[in-house]
Length: 416
Image: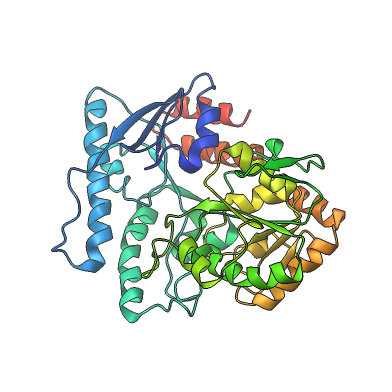
């Protein structure tokens, strides 16, 4: 069975599936990613690069769409020589968010195309316009509507799709939801666990240990989409109220979502300037190796996770798998994962006083049962669960390929 994986930053969310498929007999696995993609050892990767940037003369609403067309064209040109030599994938699984698969069915019309459907934009009821500090203009709303043109084509082109959460599924137009399946790609729960003896050595040489009053916060990048501004504005009061607590912050200074601040190099610099804190108590680790990140979660007494209504971060599930006491924002899709008072606590995203109070309560009360429930919840998002769902979906797709015998054999393999 020939499987083609396409992701701009391959492996991205397809890492666990690619790791599994590359070891399976009978699977001819090929990947496509941008020239900047990290790749994955043991998986053949074809790299592409758009031949030019989108034109600055085009209408601003169409800039992202032209960029998507250029990505799709580059992927087409990368794969065409292979197709000319007879390559025909049975199944294509792709993240289509950058446009890579716009024209893939024209090259491989017989292949079943499965899209990782991460997000469909809305001007109301999701991330856009959620934060009154960053209001959405009419121009911004129009830009989002135009941006969805790519995602509508992706939904139309796909034979099936997969969404990580029910909320993300619900954002997509009702006409397409029946062919979208809900399954999270999974986290490595077996590598994450509560460790009462855990110790984290800080860059200054100081050691923090499980059992101490340690508050942790993690994001890929420190920015408002993940509530960094709310957290930083709560810190001075929290530090005054809890003079023996330490705070560990993991995340980079780039921008994953939204915009950089206009008056500072990054959000960390801006919010530190506005909310000075003691550097001997608040430790910015930046982006760290996985083992350091894992230790930070294991020494945590309280883990704070805040987010706009947006895609769910792996870091929340990994903190839960580590048995962390969670204080999180009462926003979608967190309500799918956290039951207030059972496996964590939910607070209003903008309610700074409630955030401080819940963190203080959590520092005073270890709540071992709540930690155990957090771990049990995270186990439902394990890699094994994710792989089962993805294999099943690949098997469903394989049952439709033109070669019926090969399809039945492939389907039987995936259901073993």
